[in-house]
Image (cartoon, rainbow, N blue to C red; front, top):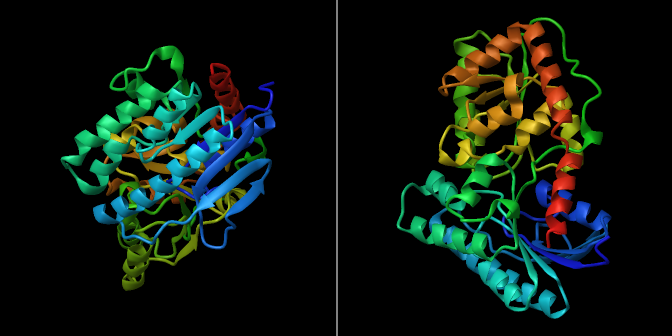
Amino acid sequence: MPGGDQVVMLLENNPYPMDVRVRREAESLARAGYRVTVVAPRASGEPPRELVNRVRVRRYALPRTSPTIPGFVLEYVVANLQLHARAVVQLARGARVVHLHNPPDTLFPAALLARALRRRVVYDQHDLVPELMRAKFGDSPLLALLRLMERASFRLASVVVVPNESHRAIARGRGGVAAERVFVVRNGPPEATLAPSANGRPGPLSDPHIVFLGSLESQDGVDLLPGVMRELAERHGLPRARLTVVGEGSRRRPLEVAFAADTRSGPVAFTGHVPADEVPRLLAQADICIDPAEPNDLNDASTMVKIAEYMAAGKPIVAHRLRETERTAGEAALYAGRPEELAGHLARLASEPELRASLGKLGLERAGGLSWERSERVLLEAYGRL
């Protein structure tokens, strides 16, 4: 047992407990005996302070900003002032571990202070920030600065936690981190959320229910969805195909406008953000699940949480051929080499019930080997190194 060691987690990118990865890590540490405090942005309706499953949450307010470079800069400046100030407070109160969650990679000054005080630092790299900014805004002189901040985060960390082998290679390569200090903690679903079976609707489907789960941002490929649904109706004879979009993000409003202007495709429903506990129920209603994220340096190296969630629900998947998606799903998905192939794969699955069933069953079997319980053991091993 860690003897009540105090851990402060710093989070800018999502509220807590909405961020599933951070929530699972924090609760796993709390169950193991660590006293965990998460400092995170405050979503609408959330209290400034709260105890969530033995995890203390301290929230700060962020301004409403546009999804532009000036908007991101303003958000990050306000968030960093809040996060660094609260990190100082927690360190003064005796925190032994500062756990940095990116993006962004601007929290390394808190790591520098922690190391100066002979405390420990965990750098938890959710995303590759230079690749993320390039995917959003293209090449920029800021990329060199982002790489420097990433490198500082790597170098100041006592241990580095990453979601997959691609990130591990980057930590070892451009981060210069020793192999024994890098731990792969995958974004797997808890065993309790695995579907009991991969049963779906029988027979060919004239009205396939397609579900997308995840963030609605430009790098997630969601702007392809209106074209995919239109192709299903016009080219593949599936005008009754319906789509449910589960998630939130800056592209939601443009997507709603695009779908409203297109009367040729089937119905589309937007749920907004839903609690993690509701996700299995929504996925259970799907016939096929989709991830339209296109190949690039960011997406190829990213483990999409949605892929494991789809497999845990026993659903067949259509996705682009991304390196880490293939490592996660294996043969449980149909892979598109080009965006125009997505609709064709969806139509094929709608017409072939045996293929739907076999992919769903294979995905469910693979999901069992990717459970959060396995990742939890690696996380606790990383903390043991501290």
